[in-house]
Image (cartoon, rainbow, N blue to C red):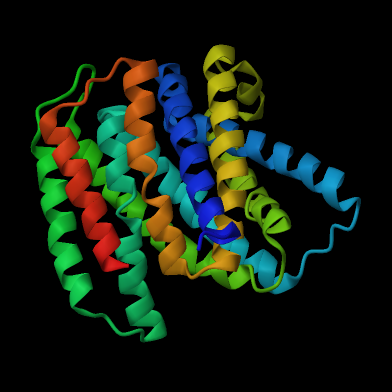
Length: 287
């Protein structure tokens, strides 16, 4: 029976797919660090307003929630986000999204190492399928404006590992707060860190001189991806198991491929489709 957890995970996948298309457009005229800063700042502002509207001014933040959710935010939004954007710089959305959603595999491995959970034969078979899917996707010739597909895949896999660590930290933080407030708490520390890094290079005033067109798309992507998408995923994590939540959210590549073909003019080849299907089949078997 489909419940709120399952529906939320699928909604998260849809929001993340919309965000990926918006990021791809915004990255045409902006580098990764300022792009990360714009999208995360927009998401933080949106989630703060949403919390005020729905929860009045009860803004209590438990220390453990702040520590773990901030850690999860830094791993996903700053380090993982930077690597993810570098992947989008070098490869197409249709190739990058299947790669980023190998993070359930890494999450399961970390669960085994950290939480001592058992790993069954499905994990072994799923791992083989995921590796096969990665080889198929990265072995295809460049699609359109792709600069370096293999380098894009490498950056994206590194981002997926960061996402896996982030999920473990965020899941722990969500024991202390509800998902909507948790989605906001994960953002301030990454935003301040990004602004600090950007200011060291360009100066504080440079944030006001960023390309407005790119900033608009990146901000909208942040609201859909880091705001609504993260909130839906957090709701899913608090209602069903981590394995189920990550499994259902792994349908994102299917949504993103359809959107990329429709709005970005990317073409979907037989090899690309085969790689997507093999990768997703592997993720499902693993979890």
